[in-house]
Amino acid sequence: MKNTKANIDAFLTEVDMIKKYILIRSMKKIDNILRETVKIRKMNAEFYGRMDTAPPPKTTAEQERTGKKINNF
Image (cartoon, rainbow, N blue to C red; front, side, top):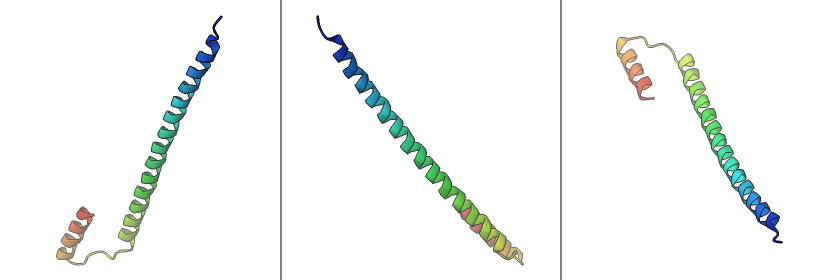
């Protein structure tokens, strides 16, 4: 009689390794997305913080320049 259980166990081990690899890869992608989200939130906080502390423009020329800078940001 052949030992078929040995073949099945080896196959299950390979399947588990593939699943583990896929899980690790997915978790790395999620971590990268979370890091990018944190960077974007910091940039938004810095931008709006600067907008709050900046004095309001006095003339129309200053308003136009400020508008251009904000659009370029």
